Length: 439
Image 1 (cartoon, rainbow, N blue to C red):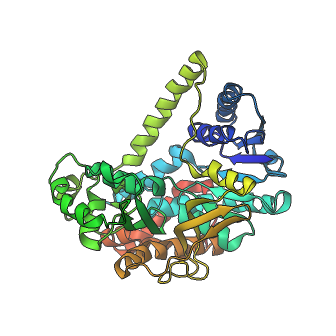
Image 2: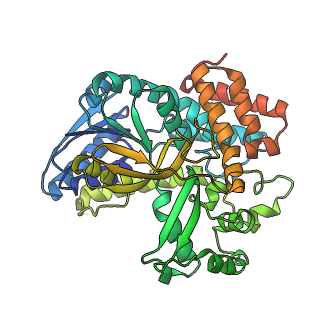
């Protein structure tokens, strides 16, 4: 079996996912093909993973493929392809995504999923993933593509609509959503045996049901505990608790993410809301700098002290591959096309996040039915932007980029149309060769 990792220079993530595979009896004998366009990062990943492979029993083999000219070789014959690329990296592209909008008075927290930062990230990433897809259709047409790269809904949606590659988008937030909520509210005694239903879109999936082991609805107690947390000046998950207060349900992704997915919290006219809701502006650039420096120290320590045993994580990838190989069923929260209206009141061409059963014949999305109307309406404010961005990438039409930015809830609530167009033009110029030509 062959497992190909695209963007293997994402060393920490590659170590976790490939390490998980090495902990699986069904996967550990695989050929692990590492692909990247950065030779230094690729070698760092290879050395760490090779040491981990030896620590975990020496099963399987590791192969490295550097640069576009070796991409088909990396993919050839793959059974599974894991995607974790970041086109343009932190420097220069993330810096551009934050600093140019800031000149126009538009502030962001993460900028990788929605908003002007998410739009730009999608537009520079989709052409690269399109190239991956064309290679896969030629050299591994039956492979399952596991996408971890953001903006999840835009990238996975593009692959699902416009390529022949079997694709599921995977995120980290579904697994920890209800656990995070219960722990932060001091309800750890309700964790064991709890039952939940989550559906919506990536980073705005709704915790529609949360029951204890006896089937009792936990939302009444959750809502009773919210005022105390909202009054705590040090509590950082206030946006999501405010969602419960105003829309009735908690959502999957963090408050720093969701602060920029709507028109409510980051407001130039209401600057007090930043401190009131503990919104960390420019959070993602700070994380990038910290991660870059942290990895340098960690890598030096690993070289000096060796690689410790790896404990299999809750990341979906290895469990999905194991289920496909063994036929043992496994449930995930997956990002899939809304074919057949899995979520009845969202459009069919949207990429939705729903429960999926994985077994020997692949990934099988589950029908959810309609979301509460207010939750569907919130999702649609994001889906509008996602669909227009996908259309821009597909048609190379500049007006669709303008329209995506205009209809983005945060951007459109802060800037007028002429300013948005000017900002988009400056961003496109600043990204240069990282973006294709638009007419």
